[in-house]
Length: 417
Image (cartoon, rainbow, N blue to C red):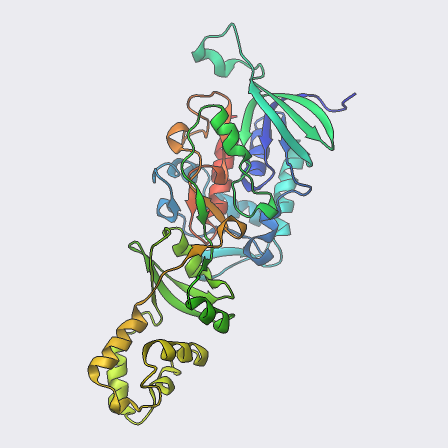
């Protein structure tokens, strides 16, 4: 005998940020809600985000912070549930937070506080959550006796789910089914493609997907340079496909990472080059010509170590002026210095690949937003089927925007399920 009822108003697949938000919002509307999570723990991605401090939103959230085939799709949900609404809940729970660079908001203590807040809201609203729950199949229940336009008033179940919970098979029914399963990013934290499979089962189109907010790898000689510089970070401007970001870059054993690389990776495609300005805001050609007049007897590497790390200067020297390594600046022609200066402001590199979904923070692409209502998150051709969070073709920049999309889309769906 099963102790819990098998029929719910709403079943949410996925106990991540958008799934939990949707669940307690729906329960607050008087709906009986069950959340199914395939992992052994809830909210793994929340707990690891922001180095364990959870960059839960940003003070400035606009549609331009998001990437989608339809740049307008996210606007309705972001306006319905804003960053200020989430901040108000954080403050109501007495969670200390701080503002960092680029208006990013982080917990002062731990991401555990954000997860605890969401679970408290679920508990207060009467949401039931089951972990270790693997979906085996889902099918639509044919409803007879109601016209199409009156189906929203029809309280009968629309979906039948077969699940395995703690190795026991169970059948569940619901009127509204919410797909909040996340995407392909970081499979070790529960990322999978099951949500896409469900979408395609019900005839929804899924756009091409790729890893986003992800480090770059190199297969040429530059990889060895990265290994030698591993751990070095500095603020640079990186440009690719007419998009530019200024933030820290980090050299790693595999290639390049750091916030600026994660940001630009969203706009990079295989075969593209990236351009790195090592000293943004400073025209290095002019600066080097001035240095030649002021410090004519100094070596170029000596002068550059005033601006850049010694190890990086050594690598640049071996690349761009190896024959003049031990010549004083006076022996460089103005043309040579201008060429080196221009290169420092526009260092062009071609990554061989990204690190892929293993370390990607988001999945770019997803459920085609043309087939989902921006007002309700319901599939336009499949009543009672809703999508929230990362599974949709909406991806935010680094800085709390993906969490804000989770809160906003989850809340919006929760109002209408």
